[in-house]
Every structure is written in structure tokens, then in C-alpha cells.
Length: 115
Image (tube, rainbow, N blue to C red; front, side, top):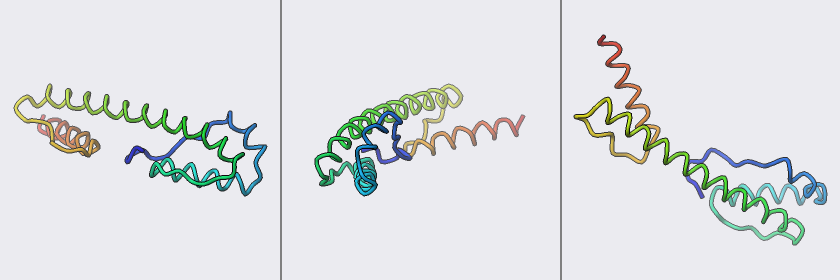
């Protein structure tokens, strides 16, 4: 699963399935989904809860892919901006994409302050 993603979405359209579960089953489902979202680990659930969990896991996977694609596109865009405005300086070599953005902003501030 995505290491940097801040959370997971729970969509309203699972409400009809949740109404079929007890409060205890809903709690176990939530814990299982969080465990899956954070670590990619599956939990043992009763059959009814497992059915709901399968549907939610496919959405977590889809959202994770979409998030990873967005992060990648934004990283490429940040690197392009960096190269355009700093042709003699390579972008910072890091997998911390927030650091690239911070370095870019600090560089822009330096130039703005110098003007």
C-alpha cells in the first residue's frame, strides 16, 4: 500500500451493506480496512463482513493507484519547474517530494527577496 498516503476514503454507497452488519462487525470491518490500507495485510473476518470488506479493498486499491499516479505527475511537474528556473542546478535527489517542493519555494523566495 502507499506509504505516504494520509488516509483512506469510505464511500457513502456502502451504507446499505453496513446496515446488514452489527456494530461489532462494523468495528472489525473498520479495523480490517485500516490494517489493509496501511500495511496491505488481510484480516480474518466472518463471511458477511468479509463480503463488505472485499468491495472496500478494491476501492482502496483503486484510490491508492490514483494517488500514486497523482504524486508521480506532480513530482514530474515540480522537476520541470525546477529545471526551467534553475537550469544550472539539478533538482534535489530525494524521494521526499515535499522536500523538492520546499526547495523550489525557498529558491523562488530568495530570488524575490533579491529583487
